[in-house]
Image (cartoon, rainbow, N blue to C red; front, side):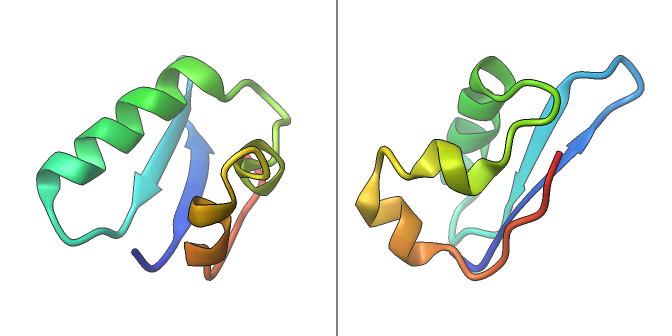
Length: 63
């Protein structure tokens, strides 16, 4: 995967966009972050709980 980018949609809900190899993987990650990320949270900090994912990150933006 190349990058994780967060933004808030019109309802203020955090959305994760992930450039990955398959649509299935992408949908799983989007669902995860819709549940887990809240306003002002930095994605990198969240992923510190998972070193494998952290190593895969190339770019991180604040929500």
